[in-house]
Amino acid sequence: MAGNITFTMIKPGAVKNGHIGAILNHINKGGFKIVAMKYVHLSPQMAGQFYAVHKERPFYGELVEFMSSGPIVAAVLQKDNAVEDFRTLIGATNPAEAAEGTVRKLYATSIGENAVHGSDSDENALIEANFHFSGTEMFA
Ligand code: ATP
Ligand code: MG
Image 1 (cartoon, rainbow, N blue to C red):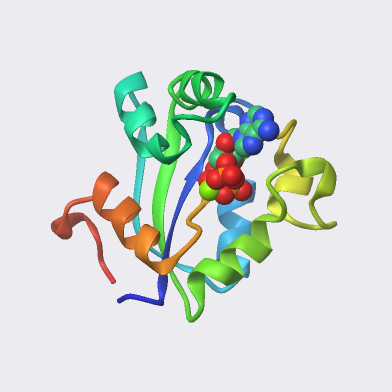
Image 2: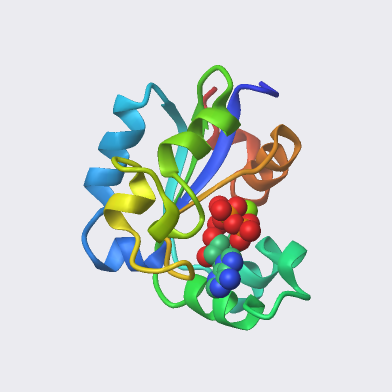
């Protein structure tokens, strides 16, 4: 499965603003197969653990608070070259810099509330998928 999966979350802002369906449609049209999916409200502890790599960054507290502010949609996606292709589909971290037609350009409201997460490497995709899903919840 390595090399062919990525992990995503539709973040609380995009969920609150009613964009779950539109974002899933982008994902499907982009050629990704959904191999796991759940609708879940992360505790501050889980959100903090997920983004622990950013612990020392000035925006960490704000990020954890936001990611635990409401439900998210977590999913594992499969496609050749999934990590890179998904990051192309979602666009730059800052929606002001995201290319036209990307998910963040269309649905993000700020760099902090940027609609979706996408894994940054094959290794992290597996770690993140396993953080949110057990083996019996993934259907690759
Ligand atoms: P993600 O990991 O959520 O897919 P990313 O890989 O594009 O995003 P990272 O550098 O990993 O970007 O940052 C993780 C998240 O932290 C970003 O998605 C964003 O919500 C938040 N973040 C990053 N930089 C800033 C910033 N300068 N100010 C506020 N929030 C930020
Ligand atoms: Mg990242």
